[in-house]
Image (tube, rainbow over all chains, first blue to last red; front, side, top):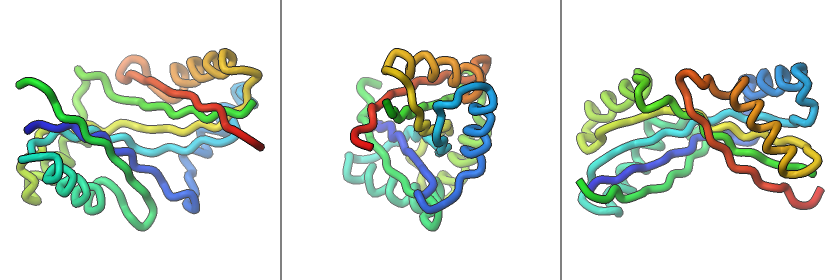
Length: 86
Length: 86
């Protein structure tokens, strides 16, 4: 079966996000004074083949914790969709 | 009113994603042969104050097209949530 997984990787709340802070500061200077906080994370799309959804989840758990996210500094969550047809 | 906007910024389909391709290649070499494609985008959380939801959407449209995404190479979409309480 073909699946598509969408992974969101975010810095933990306790970790500073200098990139997000730079964007926030730039936006405020551009006149968007209402912007109070910006946090920048990753959204990763993975197309993969697996025998079934349980297998797909097992693979995604491994991939996320080993490669896509750094568990020391980041959290991740993902959703899986079965790709229809072909 | 306080709002939280979640912005997804993705490379357009026609644009190569060398970072995603590098991750895909690494995963295949690590034994995850089922992984067929990886595309890496950004997910940005913006906390902002605006008079109402229409104003919030106007600000987010401007911010996304001017700063958060490069419209030549990237597409974006966002969802807005009203923050309850405080």
